[in-house]
Length: 180
Image (cartoon, rainbow, N blue to C red; front, side, top):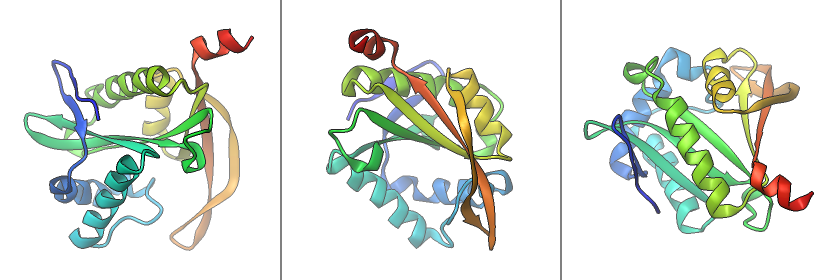
């Protein structure tokens, strides 16, 4: 997996040692809005991280960690849609530790990872989903060129209630030109 360095952060492969900070992120009140099943303890957080790492090993995803000052700050996870490497589209998942929010870090990280994915995988489209009430993640998607495709009504079960998700997409202009 590639490592991408900027002045503000490094995008690197996700590691099991990131589990503690990942767990802290998932326990944050704002992050809780997005995670359907946040880990209940460090052991579950390690399992989640290992699952993302395994997707990378199976070549059905690429989990990037955002590292700032030697510390895990969040992730941008790439996945093949339906975990199918033959598909023409991918999916992105994002989260950031509360202490790093509001600095434009996630916007920059998403832009870098999306450009990388379009080049490497030749995807035509990358999709993302957010809870309809998750304005922070929607803001990142808007700033990085994603467009709202629709609202998926009562799409997920969260805390015993069905909630709406928004579906976002960003198209690869080079792939669209080739196909016509």
